[in-house]
Length: 304
Length: 334
Image 1 (spheres, chains in turn cyan, blue):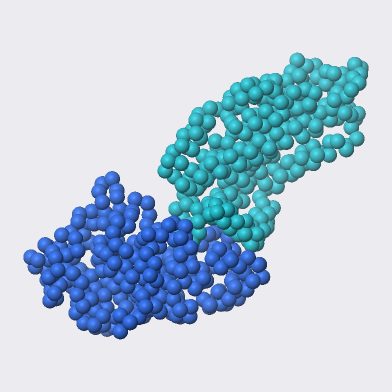
Image 2: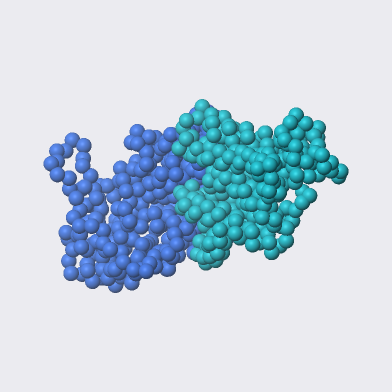
């Protein structure tokens, strides 16, 4: 009864708040003047748009049913912007289709780890005591493993598939978000407005989700943005090592792997996926860095 | 006269203690305090004497290692110390509200003023309709004399001045017409010109909604302007309680007299300010006698041995001191 009432309170206060909208408008207006955000976002938007449009663009299929041996290892030309690979498949088309996989895996896995991390970190930081002790212990357990090694071990154990890669990255990546969230919650719960809203009759759930969480959003957004770049790297690395998404699904990591023997003969097979991979990661990192400046409360005075 | 009036809060023998590793700190040591309907009571004392702790005890928000260990707090006949935390939450904000010292940190920086007022109003009054809520928010902001409430509603805390923020805090606290408003040093963080405005507003607004007020301050001037009665606190105890004019004209307790003496008066030449010698005693050590004994110029042997009990020297004027007849007869509460 009481939990349901509190949840209801949260929904109501979200519905009645016009402030979120205003906050978003402010963030957008400040982002426009931050060159890192603009450049990062431009790169991301171009890549995402190309990835989304891949099925309708007039280009060769990334996984043709009929392979023509004469087409193999063709250099950059008007017909094949990025050349063709060792089986005669169009590299440009495969890079775009590969972007779909990489972006999907990265966003989903960061979203999942964000959810796990926020809930656990918020609970630990807000309540403290035994709850904090147990959750922090679990976080540290995961944190001690390098996230790539953990993801590699998990992906290898679970077996290679798209779902398992997402699962592996989520499990190996959430601890960072949880730690960040816990630290933020620890400081925010001591703020006087938390005490004031308690004195005005707010309950734990309400305070956690309407006062503590929104005040911790800035670093979470920054981390999530950089995290997407990280997840793309992990996904590509896993696939490169053969435990990620499986052929015939086009993927950057797989293309890099298969192109290696032809590095001298046909460098375009590896160069183009590599450059696009680099650009995507750069884009997300720039966005993350820029957002840190934009969301910094000390920069708030500079708006308008 | 006072006995006929209905009490809002009736505190008897309240003791709040903090259990630290180094020992037990007795922050409140047998506080007796009654606040009647439509009355403002000032609680005055030095830093650490337990003023704020009295407020937090009433709201049952004593911070972690602290606990209410004895005594009773009756709020309109309901024993607050026995309520569940769920029931207590229903009382906070709706029946008893609090205003904090620093308005700039008491408002959530990520929500607009309207959202924060709306949250409290929808939580306690079940108004969920956006238009009705907005109307109510404007009405509450008008009550605290905010010009252009429709604009202020959309603003964020960092866009308002300190005085405006404190007005918003007052609006927040009074939005649900509580029976008791606790104001914890509401003007300390504001500059002097704003202080008087805020105090007048507070007095008016509290009267307007028919609440009682407990005003916590270390400034006797603030009390003189705002309160009907004053309680002087020292080391976790209330040492003197009197109607405001009475206290200023006839202070009975040596500590009160010392406080009033320490105030420089206008037009009087003084090369050195009068001070009460010594410092506040360590609350970790329990006192057997009067807590003021080490700093009192009139202390005698009995003061260190037995705790003075509360005596009514003049009508409505209570004091706990051995120098008044009857003050030492009862052998302390401890």
